[in-house]
Amino acid sequence: MVLGVVRLSLRLPSRSLKEKRAIVRPIVERLRNRFNAAIAEIESLENPAGAVIAAAVISNDHRHANEQLSAIADTVAAWRLDAELLGVETELLDL
Image (cartoon, rainbow, N blue to C red; front, side):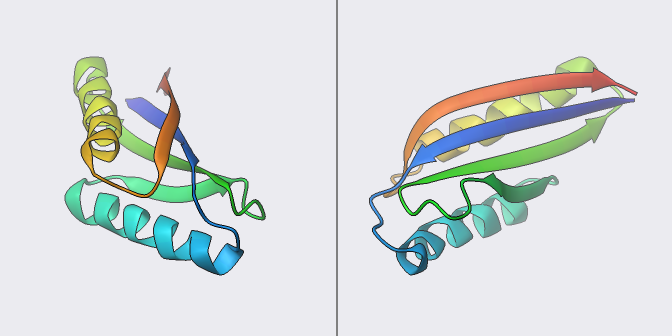
């Protein structure tokens, strides 16, 4: 079994946590609806100008897990969002 995790670092144009939630929540919900993956905001929770979103997938094949993680990152990068994608980190773990 392979656990794949991708961390997406975002820069946001928001000045308040309310504005940040208005940007981050739809991203998380759209990813959950599109992919069969666990999605959550994991870091920079109190920073209105940034967010880190993580997605986790489980598969029986490294290639499939990596393809899913790449598709998630590519989807966020392709969406015309208020958020700027600063970094993508992926990790595959054998369980």
